[in-house]
Length: 199
Image: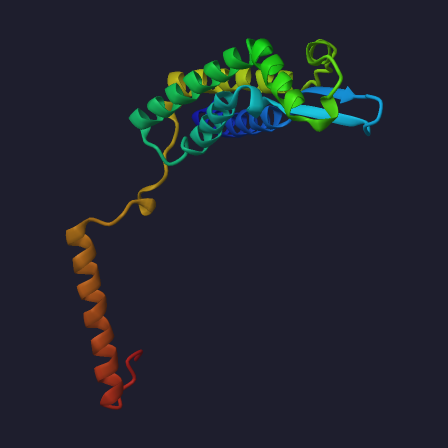
């Protein structure tokens, strides 16, 4: 794999991993339908961000870390890769072990719902459906771990942004500004004297 291709793979892979993990954690990880006499049917949904909000924060680190790969230099890029690696590992472990937190969050949502009166909350928690969004977050987080490892191992060899994106030095910038101002003054003086400044 060439250095440029490695950079593209890390960038696209990091954005995809962070974006999919963030999507998954923001979606319902547990749902339950409440059917009780005298009240309308109600569906309670508990998102991953309600159960493990810190996992959502870690997926944001993965996403923003992927964006930071491009403008950073070789040394800083390794630091960014390490942050992406650690954040993705934390998100993966947190997602994998989130079962009790999901049950607790769902129980809290049930307790706050007016439709849950007269039903056994614990039985409803035990019977809840678990959509695949949690596993999307887990898979995307594992992909983020791979991206972080790639950046740490090879990121220092990848191309960086050209010097045209660097801020000019103070001395050089002042000289350039003074030279431009002088040229503009000469053009105006020539026009005032009736001469063609482009001749």
